[in-house]
Image (tube, rainbow, N blue to C red):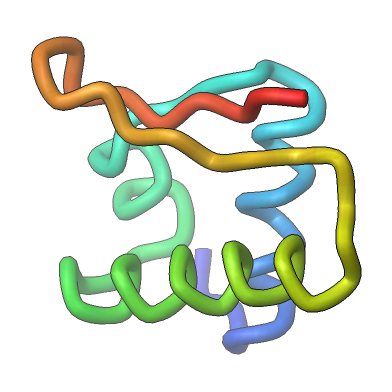
Amino acid sequence: MKVNKTQAVLLILSILLEKGSFTKEEIKEEIEITDLKFKRYMQELRAFIYNFNLPYEINYIRREDIYILKK
């Protein structure tokens, strides 16, 4: 599915809130983006969480190759 930046970031946040975790490949397949765009979108989402003091943190667990949302 083709989406713009805002839609992509909101979709990533929605998936994290619903499922609690995802792999980069799941997101890349879902919204058809490159590794670079994925990295930028994750930076944007982390900045949003930080700037608005939301009670969340996005962590990457390398050995499992998964992103998780922590409260």
